[in-house]
Length: 181
Image 1 (cartoon, one colour):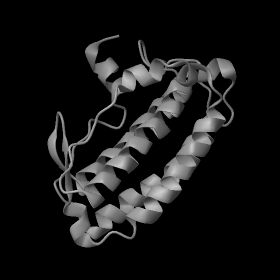
Image 2 (spheres, one colour; image 1 turned 45 degrees about the vertical axis):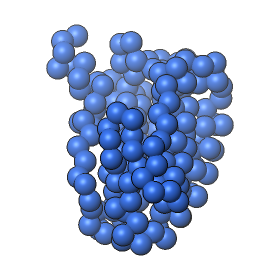
Image 3 (tube, one colour; image 1 turned 90 degrees about the vertical axis):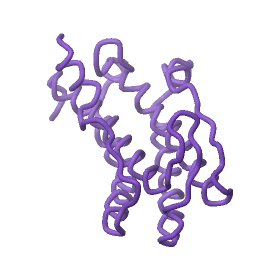
């Protein structure tokens, strides 16, 4: 597999490209993506066997099961980042070892139903709250240890992209393997 093919498997929806601020319409479109993500993920994995769930989406990549467990892990962190920025003045946030979390036993073997339920619960509460923010709130920031100052508008773009990115890992694998119906 050449570098171009591997890049396409790693970033099936392209690499993240964010803007400092969004329009209300752009924001609402991303909130819609977050609202629909749990159902889209649930639908994508609904008919997969245990063997299929334990298939990596690319060489040296996570399995479908690990991707499903990663989504609520990541999005819970996103939810907390939004809360910190909404309640503190430019707080320094913590990162986490995503790869390490993905290798923990729960990510490698737990039933995906646990994470599908968790993803739905987090997104329901998260988006419900985000829709109450005022225009000025979206310019609030936090300090990321590697990225520097990040606005809530940028963070919304990140998590909208992130959900679609991992969903495309799953759906792309299904298409390549002929698992689609």
